[in-house]
Amino acid sequence: MKKINTTYALAFFSVLVCVGAVFLLVSIMGVLGDARSFERNIAERTARAESQFLTARFSARFRAETEEARREAESHFLPEADIALFIEEVEKLARLAGVSLEVGGADLKPGNVITFSLLLRSRGSFSSTFRFLGLLETLPYASSVDDVVLEREEMGNWNGIAHLTVASMRDTR
Image (cartoon, rainbow, N blue to C red):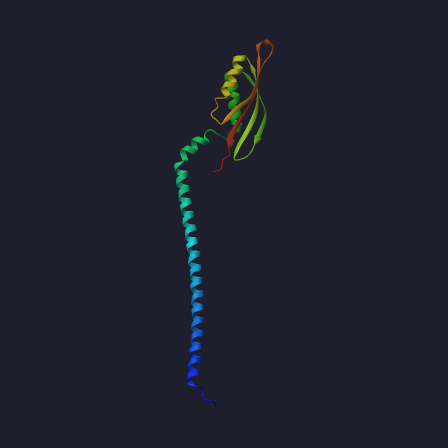
C-alpha cells in the first residue's frame, strides 16, 4: 500500500471542506431567498387586507354620512312599485283641473333608473286644459312634460296632448 502524503491529504480535505462550505452557503442563500419571498408575500397580503378593511370602513362611514342626502335624492324618483298609483294621481290631477283624461302610449325603459313615458290626452276648457298641463309640471318627481299641443275644438273645448316622462328608481336594497 502506498503511503499518502500528509500534505496531499490535508489539501484534499481542505478542498472537500471548501466545496462543502460553498454547498452550505448556496443552500443557506436559497433558504434566505425563500424566506424573503415568503415575507414579501405576507406583506402584500397584509397590505391588501388593510386596504380592504379601510375601504369597508370608509364605505360604511360614507353610507352613514350620506344617508339623509341619498334619501332626499331618492324622493325625487318614483318607486318602481308605485307606477300604477302614480297614473291614478295623474288622473286625480285631471279631475281637479276639470278635464277629461285619456292615458295611453305607455313606454317603459328599464335599467337602474327606469324611465317611463305616458301619452296624455286631455279635453276641457282652455283654462282647465292649461291648468292641468301646469299641474303636471309641479309633480314632485324627476319628470318632464314634452311635445305639448293645444288644439281648439268647436264649442269652446280644447284638447291637450302631452308626453309625460318620469324617472323611477329600481329598489336595489
